[in-house]
Length: 422
Image (tube, rainbow, N blue to C red; front, side):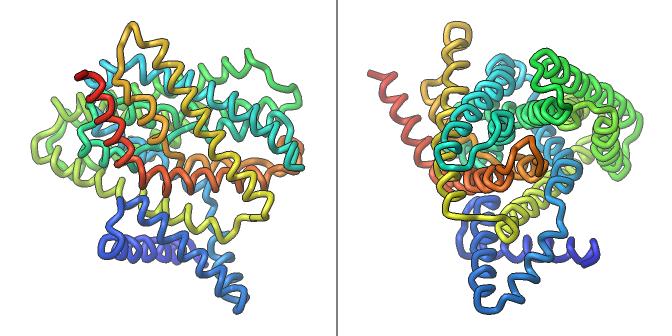
């Protein structure tokens, strides 16, 4: 199929399934789309057992979509910029320490914990992978994407500080997780082995360099916005900032995701405050909310469609099911330790640990990074099992955690408020 035809198929699927979800399931958009696309994929596989041509044609279509390239070098910059655009910089500054530690130390702790346990239980299952392969799985599965539940949490009376921590962590730990994954991969493929000092240097160069680049690009566009009052031109400038800025940061080997988060914070705060007229603010917000909604819809349709081309066996499924509690336990530890360390300096709501743990969903970035794993000595013969495990964890987190976070958060909040009044 031609690129335009592929895009047309995805848009039609996303629109049709969004309509069905709105009329029938009435689930949060991303969760409903994921569920319906999975059902559609499984239906195609079932029909394919009787009519093989149907399954082969569907697989041929999906196999033409480079999920890693589409997300990591296309959609991600727009999604992160759109998310950062609506985060209040003042609120972010007030929660800077919890966010910074959760997005950095939390990712490192989770990576090490998941990597160690996965290395052990895959050997017990008869699917051994090198330790670096297990750590790569830990790095790709550690970034969280709780955007799907933020809307629910707002309606549950979750403290604003906790909502800010959710949003701030999810925006920054994507970039941190990608840098850590690429650092581990570079160390493993260079033939020099894992070098802690080199990994730290790479992390600092990409992360801090990406933040400085995003700051510079955001300030430049801020002054351009301030010099005009024409919402069409200003929206074009914001698009240029994301598309051009992401591409240039990538070419300079800086963290493009972190750059787009920082640029989005500048435009969404200083830009909105003193460089835009009320009309521009309204049009810019509507434009980026629509971009965010469309790209998220396409992303979750793509995740569901990947089921058609992945390899699953009984052992792979068992490995995936074992990975689910492993990842949740790692998430709990990577949240609880920072919260405990910050307890004296910055007390958090007692419900923060369970809500942050269960609400930390995994999404498209984990799938994209898993699909980018090279099929060579880095992961041994474990590439397929690591991809299958990633997919199981992502599906579980979106469907099970995403659908249950609302009642569980309500319970934890009421329990903590009842305890505080006693």
